[in-house]
Image (cartoon, rainbow, N blue to C red; front, side, top):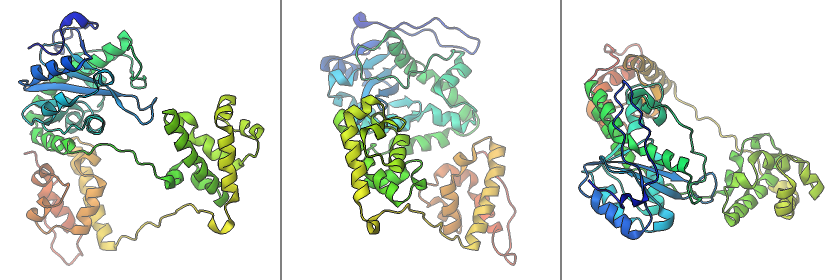
Length: 420
């Protein structure tokens, strides 16, 4: 099935890697999609596809606010399509495909890609399959895509380019190969993972988790000036230092937006805390603070000194204090239930070869201990518990909760769970 523009723009070839694991045959080279016409052609070609591989690359380490800079699409034996949002602009022709539940969209580590694409392009998603989630439910020790490709297909890992500036053009041949490689094998990888999941009765578990993933909201960064207390080292500052840190924190945000650079690239958190602790009054004093290079002081020196001065001028009565929330007291009965379910989880996780937090997250343990569902129907009605947990482990969860009841109550026999 032809996908995207003609092979006139071929730039990336596949190494002829073969391995006893059964590496799929080398696929055609990748092709750029840089115009609206080419994008419409890609969307039309994909309209009948039953399954595609998808990935995206962003510039979060280099631009502020961040943006999606590249979409990679793989389908069948066609070339990987590299869609350039910076050139095309309007990606709405792909929206129906993303929302179509019939066409399976295979990602690896989908949550960031989904939320970013929803934010930048207004996409909605259905029919998601996440190979990382699948690997988690198989209890695999290494979840990275390169590790999975090496495990199942014998493809050696290459150099990671996650820290590259994907907004820069032109991309290097190495970047283009890396981007295409991220989607080339997603479809055959899904087949391998799905076969093992089905053999172990866990395919529906992954399907349900991926349905929940598809509903993840668009990521929206909202600046909160009070987040200055989250900066590492803030808790060690006195009230005056906190006041100065707050002023510096707010000022840095404005500079970052003005420069289009991530805040940490304007000035690191360590430097903010040191400035808040030392509170220099001169440019010479600024230069003694690690991270305040001559270039930083030249560009932001006056603003830094002004922020420090504002913090110094706040009255003693208005100085902030570091929030130290008191841990809520857990009733003894609830704590017994938490401990009982946690012990059950440890045994069940070992039996099923799953990470305990995947099998039953702490937040769900606490909700179970607080709400104490009386039966399976009540358990199934708990938001976020998922069908696969209630169907596979529901009875044993109820047993664990009952085991934490006072000694005068009957306690049913326990079982860690069952494979469906």
